[in-house]
Image 1 (cartoon, rainbow, N blue to C red):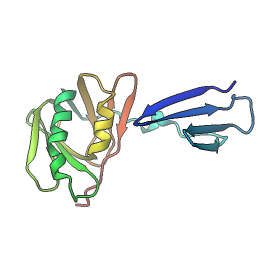
Image 2 (image 1 turned 180 degrees about the horizontal axis):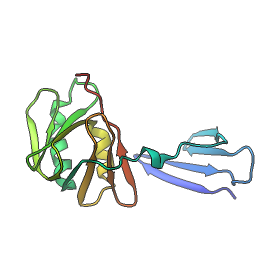
Image 3 (image 1 turned 180 degrees about the vertical axis):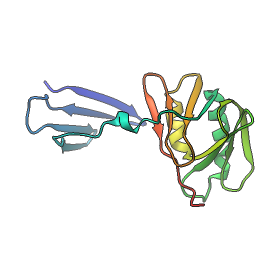
Length: 166
């Protein structure tokens, strides 16, 4: 019997089967209604993801998850025709400010420890991560070119910034 994982997202269910660890070569099957994909798993050493986790972040930002979800959704009309849905987040003066392009900003109250900072991220990635976050979100930020870390419900999120080409 193969281990099975199932995920439902949208109208389809994806089922993943994994070969037992002792079986060589290791493989994974992904099945959906009329589609099946098989992938051979690569043997060998892998990147230690813990090394990617941002540490010793000088800026910590705490805010209400629901308020950020509302603020991001308020910026949606500004996304049209801009390509990737990039939002610049600025943590300053106890507010987290969101700005799309050169448009007006939306601000929400936040507790900020450390220096003011700014980071740009893909709005869709942030919204997705927020669905798995507790009511109070805590971002740890190292700067505009470094990943942002926050811990959610049983998961740690690491979002990579969007480089604005300044």
